Length: 527
Image 1 (tube, rainbow, N blue to C red):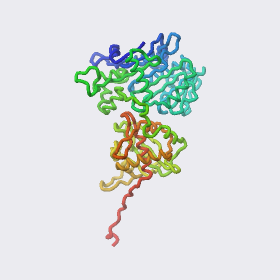
Image 2 (cartoon, helix red, strand yellow):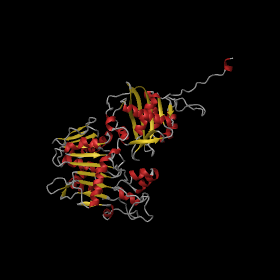
Image 3 (cartoon, rainbow, N blue to C red):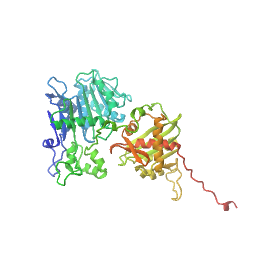
Image 4 (tube, one colour):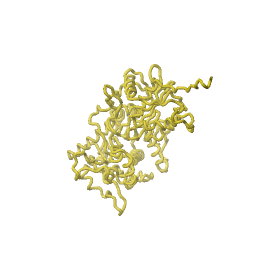
């Protein structure tokens, strides 16, 4: 039986130590939080050796997860039906996924392995990584019948019939497939509908296994991860393993307001010890110096979540989709929906400035089509993208809330929208723009939110079921503004910029736009 808490695990970290001049510093190779059922043997070493043959050298912590997660009972069946790995980003969870998938294809003989991610681009990137590993290993490559490159059907099929498929999760993805192993990447965004689509595929399989991999919980969207974590902590508290769950979590246990000054039971968020405890890749692909730069740049909440693994886990599954119901939103999805002219664009930025969104709205019949055009990290790309979209689509206007974090981009966007970006404009004159940039007032934001909500209720919104927009709606709540309300997020990790931007874009379709006054020559000129 493997059952570790923070205190017990700390005694088993021979490679972890405070920084010294004597040698390299490594993160904890066994997690502070771990629980797993007993095992008589393991297939993990086979996976580790096969990965090495393919050129994938695994860190000790990655090997540890594979050995424990792939533990076997005396009869050879899996000890754990479910395996969950909760570790901060950039530590190398992808290596664990690749080793497990290689084993399932080439040694385990698993007929179908389903690899799913929250977004299609993540699943496709995973496909490309494992494809490279196999192609560069001749004795594996020769066993491949085909590498399926068709968009949405990416996968690898062996001559002996085993298949590894890569899909983006949705309400229906995975239905109709009988998976022997399900790999659920980005498990911090995983709810009931996705589980309902994927898990029953394993019911008819003898000895299946499901792997969940991701980073710290981000609030209402982390429904399934919260359940797994709750089971693991309950098992540790009871002093006995969960009979079907192997759970591994690298995270710090930060001080709380009530801690005395000499508290040793919790971690200091600014300490290297907290980093080592929550980042097993330190010494392999991360360094304390790089982490120190992150700490200086990120917000306290963002750093705690992204680097120290301090998550927000919903206790009530009803927290998600609290404003607009999931069924109501999905009923408005139409993959053939397209906006008619004129269109309006809008921009929004997260409070941490970690992500920004550009969205569009356009009339469609007696309703409005809304769509996420871009949802990307950072903000440096927004102005250039705004100019390109404007030149291509000739929008009615752009909309930005000057009181929001996006307000800091108004000058950049305005400059980018100038007819001639090199044209010198008198500071007292309004610049000539390719499209007007409308700055909302508080009452406009309130009206926009109410109008969007009413349009959804009346069925006068159509959308393409963009994953970022669905995620934003699931994690949104109401922010009271007197007797009205606007959008707010349920957790610091929730990005609602796609929702705010489509709301503003729809408002921009109908907003009155003040035309610049033309200068009139004085009478004296015509005397």
